[in-house]
Image (cartoon, rainbow, N blue to C red; front, top):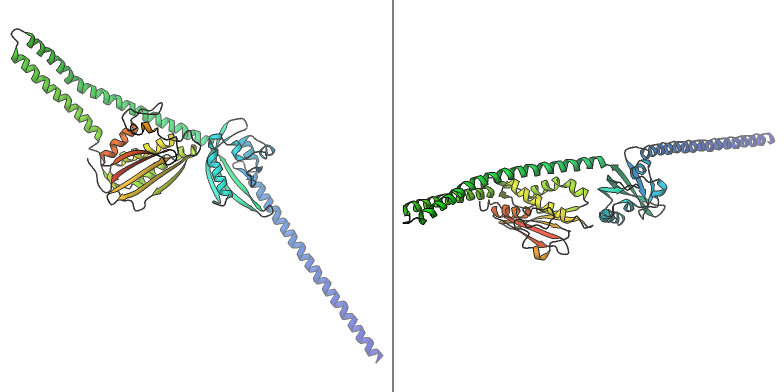
Length: 412
């Protein structure tokens, strides 16, 4: 009996030891697995840090992080080289501090919309002023980074230096403008010489015949038959001069120009695409409100494109001296038979005393203007059976509007 109990005690003790051994092995396995997980996390963390470091060290893209007050937290070496400031110097600045003073409003408004949650990101072509005073152009992409620890948000920016590209575009635009002006001057010179030649001949004949007729009348007795012949020749030469003038007027009315069905919304998009570079360089925001139900008009596409281009260009130039640069381009169906196009700017506006004169030939408020642009625009619109006029803006700037008959070629 004692022996049996001793054997049971031994078996119980042996089982306890075995259980304890198994528990220790289980715990050790858990520790080993935990160590492996920690090691794996550390490897992944190092890999992420290496990838992030490679991104930050790239030589092509400037990377910046801003705090909720838009102060620089950090900037990579590419951005530092771009603007000429060290990382420590940038921490005392904001992007607006190194933005030219006249171009800060748009940037400030976009930052505020980002901070207020009205947008999650924005893209902007803008200029920055380097520490040495030189201006550079950058393509900027900005978006928010949530930061739970600071209960706020950081702003992440990526910048590309496009100064050379913009300078090349400016040079190309200047070259195109000079070429276009040279061609225009040459054409005008040739046309003027041709008109002068055509009119000079009958005018010279009129003067000669008038002089001869005066001599015949002055004779005693007057040579009436000869004088009568001179007068008839004067009438004929006068009619010839009138025909020349009439042909010139007909040429400028462009009656022979091809007219076709035109989608004004598409024409507006084409013009805004043409001036996109200028809009970006000058920090102008364009809003469009184009009526999708707009009925096509019948007209000459080149002429109507010239009108829209002229109005948009005038709006751009009108905003040169203001900080808030916005433009609104609208199209609307006024009635079943008429469409309206509006170009509104936030510029310096039109002096009320000039509002009725700006469409007059050779009247201009520009120092280097010829005073023909708006006059030609009105002539083109009226030749299409429409109407062009100007109004003061609601609070500032100017509004130019024109109407055209929908689906009709107008008075040709």
